[in-house]
Image 1 (spheres, rainbow, N blue to C red):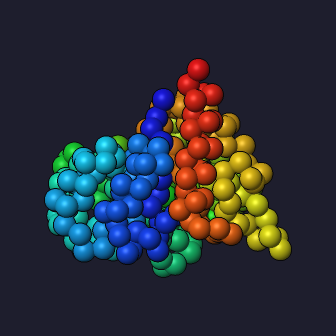
Image 2 (spheres, rainbow, N blue to C red; image 1 turned 135 degrees about the vertical axis):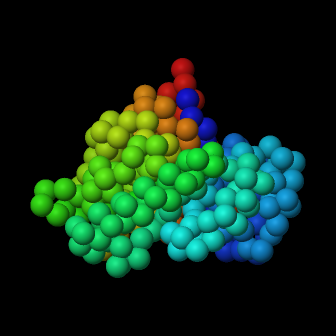
Length: 254
């Protein structure tokens, strides 16, 4: 069974003010891993020391594609120091995903970057939103990315929220790509004025247990909580989400 982590973007304001303190805080909540979304000028050595002290593992990190293109060696060195081997691109600018040819060119870039990273002992992954499910000649942008890259050069972090909102079953995607799916973003969804809103786990409409069961079957390494909209203190939501995901995790582990 994979590990339970939190994408620190879920507590982004607190993280920006006190990243090291938030590493302690999520450990206290019961998460075993933290997925980073920036380091706010903290040295890799300080981040690593605090993770070791708190007993937190790196659950990957979100790194923008331009940083990988322009600061590849420096980026890998930082992540080597903190013990993180999973680098995940969280988003694509419009000029990399508007047309079918854009997606194909982006796949070529991912293959190139992923090959270099793989040689250095790292993996490159991609995290989806909803725009990757636009179709081009019967293929989604997501399929174009993954069908035109070597499985060793590009892994998938499936955001189950956006897949489900786009009328694609996360379970089917996990089954299709198997062990290329190294982590799942576990987010619940409710609609407000016909717009998707992420909410505390268990208070929305998504079958989170089915997603985690499929991830477990295909050896996903991380189940990562993420929440982006709030009606209460994000730290309170993060603690509630830790309890909710641990309950599902414990049921599947029996």
